[in-house]
Length: 359
Length: 281
Image: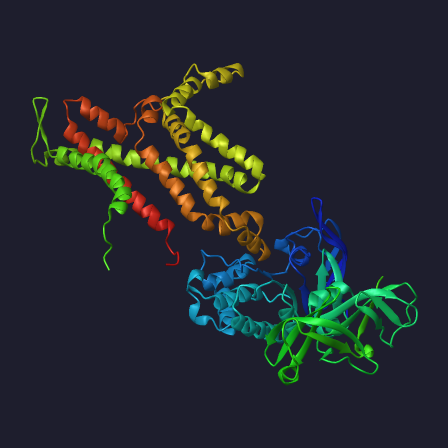
């Protein structure tokens, strides 16, 4: 089979005492893909990764690697090397000894071990530090050692648990491109756990969004950004205006900010069914006067402004307290009276919204 | 810029300085001076004579005793470390936090009783008519002479060192970063191998310090070699008492004591530099 998944989670549940960390996880990870698992802390993303590595055992369900169940395989018999958030480099070994470690465990001879490790140091551009102590390295160099240590055994899959979270912003971006380059070059599967949207969306082929042990959505960055499946995902992404309410049966949604049009596309909604519509902050507009024509609008007061480079995001609050956001370029904003407390109209085209029907 | 000495800083540093002077430097200086005194007609006379050093270092008895004490202390240190390790490993990694507290408490209990009393109770076990031989007799076996042997001396050293070594090992094992152990497993290092590849190297400083303490305690111990070993073979501590008893030879005893202090300093220095070898600056 061409598209046999490398990893399959089949109804995997993980409980720690009474706490359910992962609820009924079904997930397939394909060969050679860069998969990011994203969510806030405690959502079960790290537990999922640790179960795959064999560091935590699933309470129920089955995990398969290359078609074989691995539930009962101890971690030291799996080929699922992991890069830790703390990197977990051995402080009592120098750089090259760290990289050689996994080869030594596999009984690779001293000579071959050394040459393979040297190869990887060169590849990660840290050859000059081969005999240094770990304590003498910078954050970025340690990162490279950790990657070399895991990749030296040429695994089919590499697990990464928030490896970049300790780095400063510049280095983070540099390491992101190192990681992406490596993944494409080696053609192996990366499973990357992070709480950072920018990391997940910029590197991953597919992103899994988890919340409270449940997978909320799986898809490409574009899919998730354009069409969030649940209100949680839309809120988590944090770049949308979100309104929930009940359908009136005539193509409208009754919300706390008033009656809003449902998008034309898609199925007509039954009367009384609850639903959520999402408007991206880049698709919303601002005006001083009430907008005319076939648009929806909400009147709201400016509560703040965030500078984001070429654009700025204006935060507003509607009368009922719901928060709105609009992202615009600086020329457009210069023509508007953006002062805290200023009342403005936030408007959008009804067919540019995204509908999330409640299940 | 030189630090100015203030009344405030003196308040805190002076007591320590005085303590060190009065209870360590002065006695040591006196001991050094004493080793050059002479003894005439069972009376000590202040002098500067190297005769004591020459006499003691010229005696084969002294060097035999020295080598033996060194070997016994080294043996006790290694044996205690090896026996204590599984115990401290289990307490650090296998017990729940509650049980660990209890185990640490239990390890402190032996310090409540005098070491001498604990050694006496060993006599009851080990003597020819003691508990162990009594039990052996019940099963029809010949009694084994255990008291007044090196074996009994070792038992005494273990009694002295074991709880302390376990505690010292335990505190170094407890502070090992658990992710290092997981990382080793993850890189295909099995459970037992991880102990040697990761746990012991990670805890090296603590393990060496624990072994060093066992060495220091056994090297200078007088109680076990006398009351369990029967004074034979003669350790340096026994040699000191013998020397003082025979003809008021305090200066010669000072030579032995100074040799012991010198040895301990050298061993401690070697052990500590071994413990920190290869660590990043």
